[in-house]
Length: 469
Ligand code: ARG
Image 1 (cartoon, rainbow, N blue to C red):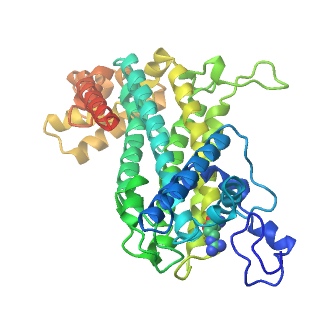
Image 2 (image 1 turned 180 degrees about the horizontal axis):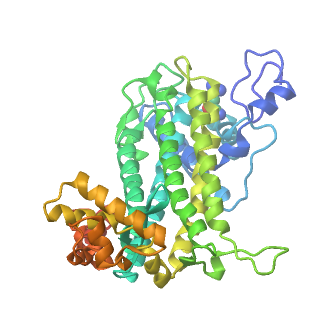
């Protein structure tokens, strides 16, 4: 191909030889950017219309091109067209296919006034925008499932933990909703990000802006963008929008991994707080009795991969000079991988949580273990006018007393309590019940049943509001 542009490539005139095989192998991106075909076709059609409007393309030729683009789209959806060995990237492949259908003159005319640099910057944003929509709707579904499950468990209690040690009892519903709020914030992050991301770099050309009198505003509008990038150098070369999106996907991965970790622990024999549904658990090839929480483990494991995609891209972007650099081709694989990963992780986790069996009696039986009502007793003493510092000491002594004898707080005798402190009267027992402990947490955000009901209503309303486009 010396001295001319080769098949599937978009440059060549000034070269005396074609690219070496090792360069081709390194440079090629069709094995991953082929999924951008629909966006390339949308933009190419919009671009053709803009060329016609500016008088660079006859209307008859425009019609021919638009009809050909339609057939290419159908063939793409029907899996009848594929990139060739000689195609450098999705843009080159599509030009080759278009030329096969409308001839070299027409097919080769659409490169006027645009560059792969503004094209790829645009398509990546369009891809991320569509993926964000898909992720958003699965996240909403996950929140709805947690809401539904939190309703089913009623006012039953479980041990609340800090440092993974028994701390204070909480409602199972309160706990489930605590895993829903981070997902709500992820949805809000997506919405916030999309306001910044929905700016079109199209018309930025290679770097300096497009010529030929084309109107980038019209193309941006046709492609569903809110506005046009105010700086072509920035528009064609910035990928902070992709990095920010990858942060959101990594955060979703982390949020889900925390729930996954607890499902793994709480489904073990020592806890048996939850049981996995058969359809959402796996067996062992050797141990016949096994029932494994593979979904939760994969969700936990894949969160590492999501973080890796983010840190990989950030490292690629560091120190890149203006404007486009080929390094930027490395934005796509982490982006695609993070989206693909969440699109399998989230539905599986949703199914796992939706089908989980809660062993509420076991959970509630353990809710007050580990002296988890001690703080309630101290709070009771404060209500009796004892300074918290002293109350803390008194209840600490009571805990030590009970621990030594292997009994629970409410099993200490009246005499023993009185010998620890005159403040520990028999009335203090009113603070030593699960119900009293739960009821007492009645401030906003607390685990009192009435507060949790309010919380659920608040979350439900928020989900409905976020679900209306
Ligand atoms: N495959 C390239 C990318 O992903 C498309 C842009 C190529 N531009 C260029 N000047 N080589 O970034």
